[in-house]
Image 1 (cartoon, rainbow, N blue to C red):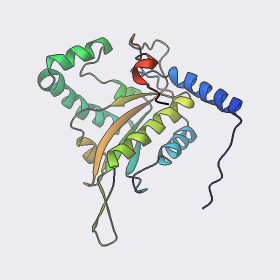
Image 2 (image 1 turned 90 degrees about the horizontal axis):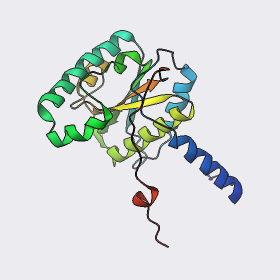
Image 3 (image 1 turned 180 degrees about the vertical axis):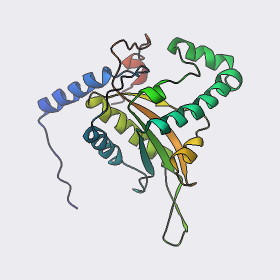
Image 4 (image 1 turned 135 degrees about the horizontal axis):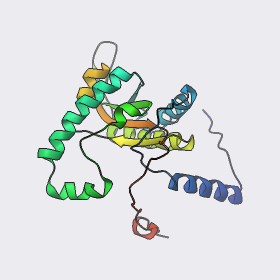
Length: 216
């Protein structure tokens, strides 16, 4: 397959890069969601972006489950909050809790029911050939992480806010969503539109020069 890249002039490339950077800089994690549904076409297009991500040996070890059924969302919330209670009351160190304090998080996760869509992202640890023999997946965590980033960016580009939720452990998602044993829950992405009264924590990103270094 011959590559046919799109070539922009340097000026247009700079404009496009800066517009995208400015748009992504406005992205904020949301915890207060409106019930307004996300158009099916928006979710499908964003998932197409996610599924286009690069992966080790092109194994594409990501699997996505879109959850909009209120009863299933309620089951996920019950299971997730049980794990979160254990985390906040027993598992988390004082240092970890202090780090989370500015974000105002706790074991209560109403957004799991309020948001119009949950997208459960699974990591396929290994594939199976027609005879049931295991097929190794390479760099699966890195690959699925890249796909998740693509998905968040695509939803934001369409005006959809997201929240990355990672209760630990998340194996309850396999049972509730009827996923096979070779898939491990990687991330529960909460997606929707912010309520009019929604607020975000007052936090700042590290200075550009702190996280970026040029050599040559």
